[in-house]
Length: 388
Image 1 (cartoon, rainbow, N blue to C red):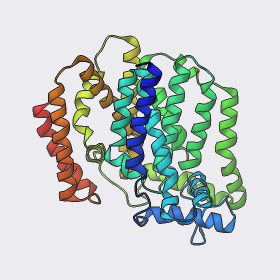
Image 2 (image 1 turned 180 degrees about the horizontal axis):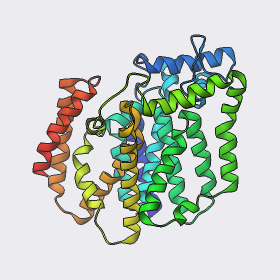
Image 3 (image 1 turned 30 degrees about the horizontal axis):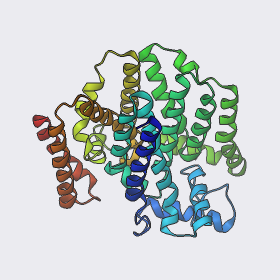
Image 4 (image 1 turned 30 degrees about the vertical axis):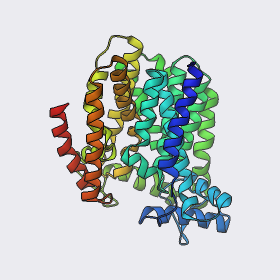
């Protein structure tokens, strides 16, 4: 089979499975308190009032987030009518498209087989599925960060034209959730550059047109909003809501530094059981190109995990941008196992057993009680490692 036909077949299989998981009965359940109703209603009020500049909830200004996600939901309302399905469609669509970007990154670094497994693994990871089906900003932010890293890899590979698009999607990430949209991609890229001592990897992103476009897209709305509401808005959004969330407990989401360990265990279910072996596998190797790509994915995963672990406030969905990275690591593990035909029967048996454990865990604890599911998974993981 020719390579193009193989890629097309991969896309069809991944697309079919992902579409069923993400879009099936998307609007069948009511909006979940407290966040979904706030986002959905804010977008509805924008649509009704025609004021697409200042987000409002029940008549009061809502400055927690920039307006891009509200705009997407509002546009969805205009296309499909106001409903739970329409409120969730933008996040679901971006979650769906993010699976294909993950496929491309896996293909670009390690080959087609890794891309295929990585896409399927991401599409069947518990937290990624759940967040893709919710009308909240986290999936939109994750999509734009994922796209920025894909454009960076393409630019680093020698095609400088993609530097412009890197800055565009970073600007959209900032318009989705604020400074974290540019901070997180650059944290990953800078750390990888410092570790590799390849400073050209960072310099390849220098693009006058891209930086200018970023400033126009990312900052224009903030200037307009500040001109309307003045210093009060700037102090609230940048100091209280962004810096304050990282350094102080302004919303009551204080959690211990190890909070995201059980969250990752639960959120990356059932593939988390293969993650330790996948990490150790990527720490080895002799091919320079493979080592370079492996290091980047590991830095991506650790940078997101450590950054949010150091934050005073911790919410389950904060680490969503690392799920494509861990999916890529495990996808590459599966690709290598099948390529080398080693322990294939054992791998299949482990997948079946871990899926069974997932079903039992969800049945026993229920999805709303995610922390309890996480601790349950940690126990099963320790037992699995003994077998692994």
